[in-house]
Picture 1 (cartoon, rainbow, N blue to C red):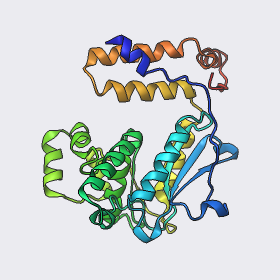
Picture 2: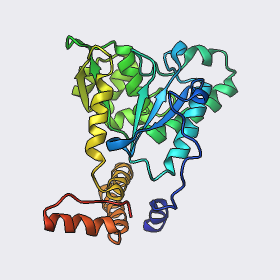
Picture 3: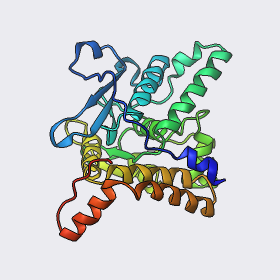
Picture 4: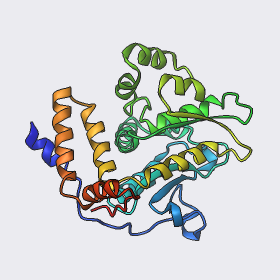
Length: 281
């Protein structure tokens, strides 16, 4: 079992930069439903994916999914990207979930192909830290936006992994209750259940969750990039297997960290009582 695991966990691939990076202010990017923006200055290393489909409330349609898959494929190979944030460019909306109006016009064969692509996209973005929001008075935010966020960032869309991921998040009994009833949850309820990590009070601009996510990204930035990346792999892969296999996965990941300059730099910084300077090597 360890041989295929070793090949599956080889992360240290050659660095390959993005060919292009869209920005909300770039004329060429304005018409795109998915825009990619790399932050600069003290936030260098944080990259934002802006969802920009206002007429459909950022619903997951064909063009939207295709552009998002293209962006994820490029960003996956870009070692300059330390933290990836999903952000809506549409005020008051994160993501409405599946585009049912568009899907209604598809043939059965087209639906099957599209859902397969959607499932693959969800697999790419599901293992992420989550945020929910409340409005400025502390009341629960509109449940459609909250559930769209949860379905999108956790890969819980029906037919696109939801029946498999939700039981792993909440347990079988509660997952069945939510799926069978189609119940909508507020941000606070989602946090209590563990579907989101944080529920924040909304601000006047309607971007409180974004600011909390960016603050969290800024906490991650100073950490050793290779260790963070390998920790994510160990957790994600380890949760899919029994504990003994999970320990083996952790060992494989840690072995990749041992020869890195960053590991030695971390120990030296601790010994010298100074901030570490990680280089990702």
